[in-house]
Image (cartoon, rainbow, N blue to C red; front, side, top):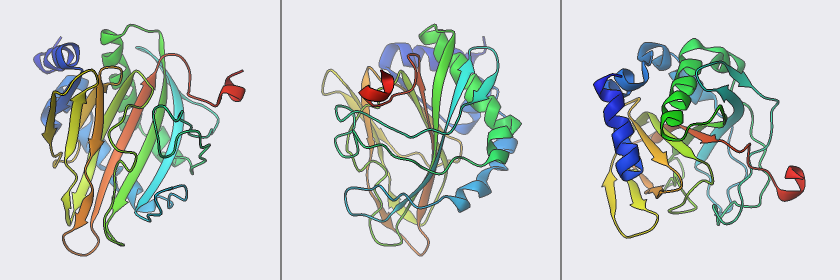
Length: 243
C-alpha cells in the first residue's frame, strides 16, 4: 500500500474524515487526473434545480446511481429519484426529487469509472462490504442572483456510509468554506477547497459537514463539485418504496 493511501485510511479511522490535495488524491486513488479534467465541460450543461425550498435560484445539478462491486465492475442502474429522510435533511428531506441523469458519455468515461471504483475500494478497507450503492451528484452553485448556498440544509449528515466531496473548479466567488464537525461533540475543522480535484472524504456516521455561502466576486461566479455517496444497505428510498 502506498504512503498516501495509508495516510488517508489513518485519517478516516482516527478522525472520520480526510482532506486530500490533487496530488495526494491521485496517488492514494490511482486517478487519471487528466482524464477527469477532460470531463470539466460537462458542468457547463447542468439543468437548473427546481426543488429548492428556500426560494433561491442558485443551483444546477445532475444525478445518477450505480452499484459498484468492491474490486470489480461499476454498473449504472435505472434512473431513479434522489430521496433523503427528514432526519438527515431538514430542508428537502421526505421530498422525492427527480433530476436529469448524468450524461451517457460521462458515465462511460474510464476516468469517471476509475474514480468511483477506486473510492469504493478505499472505503471498503474501512468498512468491509462486497458492494456499494453509489449516488453521484454533479453540482454547480452560482452567484448570478446573489448568494449561492452549497448546503442550504445547514450542517448535516447524508444517511450513508461514506461521502466524497470533490472540487471540480471555482471562479469569481468568495466564501465556500468547508466545515467538518464531530457528530458527537464540538470539535471541528474549517478550510476552503481551492484546487480542482482536491477532495474531502467523510465517514458519514462520525461527522457532520457544511459549506458556507458563496458571494460574487465578479461576473459569472460559480463553484462546481462532484459529490459521491456510498451506502452498503441499498439506496435510500421512501418507506413505502422500500417495502
